[in-house]
Length: 391
Image (cartoon, rainbow, N blue to C red; front, side, top):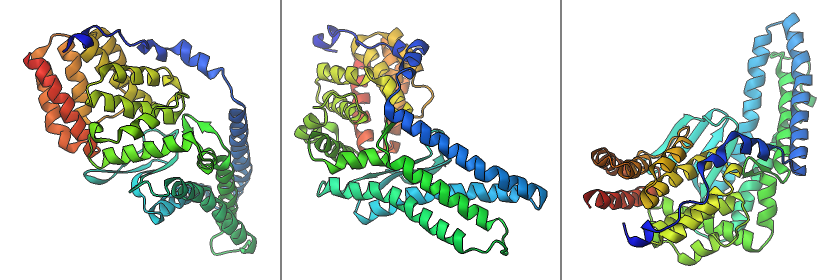
């Protein structure tokens, strides 16, 4: 450890930023767009109950209500699938590389080992599709098309389901069909309305908000483009030190507290770590931690994990590191990443042999990292910890 790192001030943001009183304080700040989205969500529930309950009671008296209930649930899931597949198909057509698909309980991800199917544990996030660009040619336009095709698919499904309902006789071979078609049409319309309204929902921009941003030229679009290109480079196996430094600077140049700003700071943090600029890495980490409560849960846990590593490795503060580590325990991380953080804390606690064991475990796991670039960076950071152990 060099002298400059030993003299660095501790992180200005502490893990108690995630304490209950601060969470409550944040929840009292209500934005107008939140009111609109909440009102639409309330209308969703009211309309679905108004349709579902009478139909359920009807089949309760004249037939099997559970057949209707199951068909209704499948129909609603089909609406979610249609919306996300609109994004998915458009992304493939413009040449993007698939990265992530979430539809209800289903989660499909692509990493360096291939396609993996798992259970979505973050059920507040019912639908999400993510891609990586193959290049930056016309990237904003291509992404606008990809984003727009989700709501467009929902609107098209609404029209088709409504038309089918209108021309389906009440007496059919499948008695619940008219009711299910009406349910699909209305729910798909509601999904269209909710996603087309420009809003920030739990740190994620709705399709409408992202489309509005992409339709404009300027620094926000430039930052977003740089973020995508840098993440694609990492996915492709580049170390942060190999990234285009101009893109890193632009990706971190707008400190507006948005999700894109946080992602930019995270990338800037890894770039600074990999190039040995620890003071700059700390500034990027602190900037992200300052808006921690406004970030999605998974990203929040990742930031807490890096804060634990930084406090342990560069400030030798094992107590603060353990406190941050507790805030990241509910989320799964790459084995090599978790091993790196554990090893840094154990070294700060003077538990040399336990730290060495975690370093060895991490080095053995880098080949199985989610992304090739992540694996390469973790190998570098773990070997740096190995030098600390040897000295």
